[in-house]
Length: 347
Image 1 (cartoon, rainbow, N blue to C red):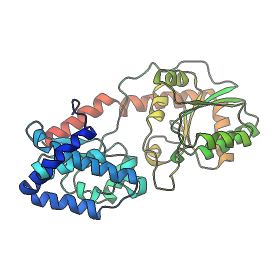
Image 2 (tube, one colour; image 1 turned 90 degrees about the vertical axis):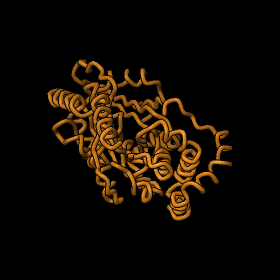
Image 3 (cartoon, one colour; image 1 turned 135 degrees about the horizontal axis):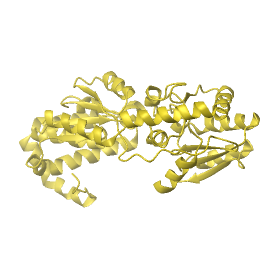
Image 4 (cartoon, rainbow, N blue to C red; image 1 turned 45 degrees about the vertical axis):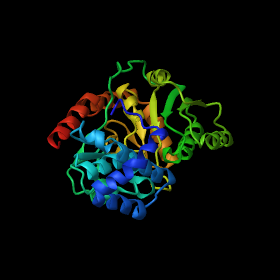
């Protein structure tokens, strides 16, 4: 609910909510205890998200049962725990959405086995997510409802790419974003004699490691580490870019990108995209149709990027095709209408 903010001070309600629900819904409480004791712990963060979600549900299930007809959890982790537990206590129908974090990292959220039992439907924004729901045993109807952009910018209609080419990546500096591979591609581009300026927008725990790698490769003159920027500044980066590069990988803990908003934003601006086929990216970026699918071979990928930058017709074709895909498949208003239809049908 938009007017609800759970604070730690609200936990005092557990003093009386816990015995109240033990008396009113003992079977539901046993099921929650089973999840608490037998659920897996893929990460410490996930465990405490679920624990907090359980506390929220115990505190607020009563008031919500009189106010709402359906609960939809936009994440299957902590929010999913709230929706599931409120359902067990009050019978309010609920549904779940799953994303890369709660479906893949560490094998997925540790309590999904229990949360899936009573869900009326599950949603994913990628086909890869739907396949993962099936692997996890989701018996409820599974629906592909992509996310979307609330507004679409006027596509960039600048001059054809020319040296020094303006290359861009937007994303957090974490393992799944594949910055080590990205640096290797940039190194090969420089070795090929390609003149470029590269902007890396975003911050994170691997920033220092990435900067050190760039220094060792002699790339500091070509690369600008912008850090985290306000969205208006990021939009200016899109508006001036000749190519957007996504270098995502599957992290050692299983985490990966779904379909990053940054790729969608670049496509909306009409920026050609070169991307690795990870997660939901592979079902959107089609090689030589609306972008370049990278191969994880830095030498080969650098040569393909160089060839694209020297081909204004191909860049224009990818720009148009990318924008058309966004207009057809990645609109927030259409996604919301479809989600509301499903919620109303299952309330």
